[in-house]
Amino acid sequence: MNRLENKNILITGASSGIGRECTICCYKEGAKVHLLGRNESSLNEIYSRLNDENNSYRILDLRDFDKYQSIIEDIVDKYGKIDGFIHSAGYQIIQPISAMDYKQYIDIFEVNTISAFEFIKIITQKKYGNLKGMSIVLIASIMSIVADIALTAYCASKAALVGGAKELALELASKGIRVNCISPGTLSDTAMTENLKKQLSEEEFHKIENKYPLGLGITKDVSALCMFLLSDESEWITGQNLIVDGGLSIK
Image (tube, rainbow, N blue to C red):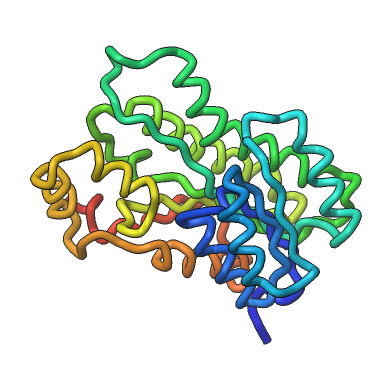
């Protein structure tokens, strides 16, 4: 039997990168996946591969907080309660603090951090009944631990996500809900890394690659851990920040 058989999994940032890979893996593990993202063509393409009416997708800018409640109610009404949540959406601006505008800080925190907490507040409401066994996986970043230049807001937003996950793990434990983070290093097959390459010289990017003892990772390295955390195999793990970084942080 598949590890996520008939579980309803909500995924943000599902149109690319880690979110896209987690979507495919969840589906293969028997889950019913409900995708959120901004890129309609990418979501359409992924959804067409699922070939199952028990899955769904919705176009959403995560800064539209007033839409969250109706989205969750619609999913629950049609498919049942949420069993798992992967917050994979991420937004990054690479520039020194001298060039940052306060609105950019707000955008980064709203997408990376606040949106996750708002969804968790909604999906864990009492009206959805017994939520024991729900697993929440928040995709943070190794930058929450190992800072880098020109990433002030991004590093801070991911560190806040990790800190919030620990508190939420305590707060929601009485309901039988688990909350964990995964902090990946640089992954070679994401749009974020492609954007990074465009902003750096080849020599500068090679310096980043060389920091990783095992080289750069790929999205499957993260999705595999997500599947474990969503499954009942991890039923005694909560409040953790699991680092997947090819050895970067041990130096």
